[in-house]
Length: 411
Image (cartoon, rainbow, N blue to C red; front, side, top):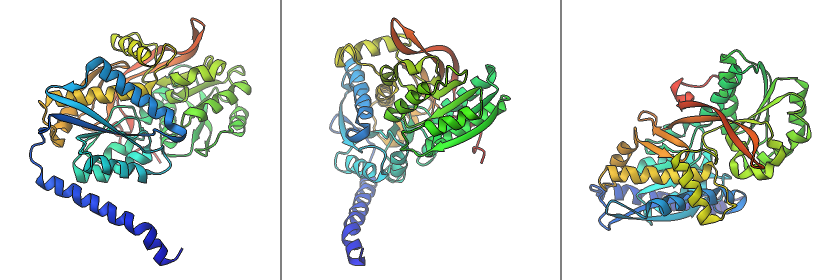
């Protein structure tokens, strides 16, 4: 491509990005206390609403709708407006950044709720900091994200939080050796690192590890390497969705569980909405997760009931729907705490240390890290009333992100 062509292709975007950043900075310079003069709280959402991950975006949106169906569309004296933008999934953070700019500059969003994927969250960190705009991370689970901007708060989970809990549990429950299979991108590396760290700290031994390309759907060679190593267990993490179904089906076909090797996975590999598709392959599989549809607390009973009223009796909410619900709960409670003051720093101060009674159980926002502290459930794939489910049989209370609690991860 010629120099002139490159200028024609990229120059306008550079100019637009600079212009939007300038507008944001001008808005900051002229801003006083951010009490909504129009009587409105505007929440912008940045979610995957089209393409391969559109189903994930639909779950987040469903959770938002359930929250407002149960709790209304006002908080204090403010009416609540949500404005959705589509980042189309994790292929690039550029679109996510542009959608966030648009919500801040054009739509005057007071808070951003979204970012299902790590690259998308990372791409907006400097923008949020410059604009002084609070953003509630709805899913992206790589540990370091909240360290990239003081205006991030996470209402989902971190991969180390789940993987390390499962590793520690395995070491305590007579699993002596393990082989790890993870997708080769930041969350997969987080999962591998922190499962191994916790498992070996408890006396376990890793007999092999492989990383599959993040787009891999053919897991047979990786599973064969694991079987050849003769471990007590295989630990696995992948991006979820169709990738998780492919992995679980291949593990069943190769008879992993029947061979006496225990299959251990993070909860997003066997999320509740996927369980009917995974079917018999979930039998006996051990997972760690922060939500399952069968929890019996009052908040979850009300949540699932309203979810089915809105979306059909056969509709199944998963942890993504709960993240949408809890993101709204966190924002509503913070705005109520500030008395309707939408100033970014006031809202961030309100988020810190906040406790929410959620369908997942109670959780707290760590005031130092702005990350979620929550219970992690150990589940087994079982049939309940003829239907496969993740059934809790153990739990670990009030788990923090170990990556932050313990300092930098090992290299």
